[in-house]
Length: 362
Ligand SMILES: Cc1cc2nc3c(=O)[nH]c(=O)nc-3n(C[C@H](O)[C@H](O)[C@H](O)COP(=O)(O)OP(=O)(O)OC[C@H]3O[C@@H](n4cnc5c(N)ncnc54)[C@H](O)[C@@H]3O)c2cc1C
Image 1 (cartoon, rainbow, N blue to C red):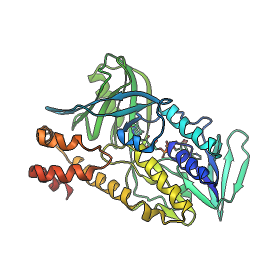
Image 2: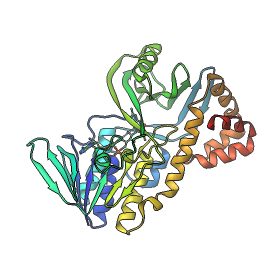
Image 3: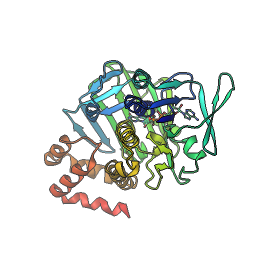
Image 4: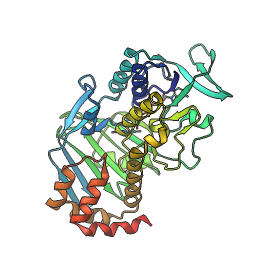
């Protein structure tokens, strides 16, 4: 089949690789002149990345073994973890190379413009030349604002995005541990993070739907950090009513909103979704049906997010108190945050006081 992918992010390129490997003709159009630039991501992956069996050497910056969670007056430490910090430029280029080696063609400086009947219009932004193409399949992996989904009129109007800002800073850090900070003052609707690249350098940021820059500046000042570089971008909040396929158009990655609403991590869900998409196209299966197990996880993350977004500082401190019990930490240690269902079910069975928080669902 003749497949056009809009957006050469990691998710679009991974889908392009899988589809080209299965013998399809794949063209990927990317509006930037270079893959993986500019960086708009922290680049933290859970150990679930190992399930993809891909070599990490070319993009791995640090492996973190401890997570420290700070609530306004409490702290939880999770030792014995394994999380990967990647260079997003090299990470994206790794997936672009995979796609190219499998036979996909990546067209840089090519921007999706519009839809005209069965055709799509692509502009070569270097020459201003307009190309009209008629692919059998179109995959929109063009990020949270998905111009392609909008042109096809399937982008849900009520979709919400977070705005994430982070700085690269120099300071002394424990290179094995990353920190997250919760509470009304720091970041009322998500959290702030400090993720070390090394003993002397870290990625420091936060994401919010309101007053993000103000919150970020306050956090930076509190820690006396001076930014060496600022990176920022939108992150979609999962929208359960977003249609994921219509006729020959498929939505993928941030374009589809498949991001964990609890942490705004989109890389692992997106890569998993790319595998399901490639399989659905190749084996002529119903994409939305095949996605169902992943969709259920996205919905659960959204429910947990709905609860956490209403937390007071007291709620955060009490949650930390409940989680700090060895019986709960033992459960959390057995799972990653990619799959919250077993953590939630087992924790509720061991500690019914977690039920208190269900009031925030309504
Ligand atoms: C500050 C911040 C921190 C983050 N931290 C993490 C993290 O630690 N871990 C994690 O898992 N996720 C994180 N995320 C989310 C993660 O970056 C995204 O989920 C991920 O990039 C999604 O990949 P994608 O390929 O779907 O989209 P993108 O990476 O956004 O790629 C989309 C591509 O489409 C291109 N494009 C857009 N419009 C057009 C057009 N009209 N024509 C052609 N091409 C077009 C864009 O240029 C881009 O290259 C973070 C996001 C932000 C903003």
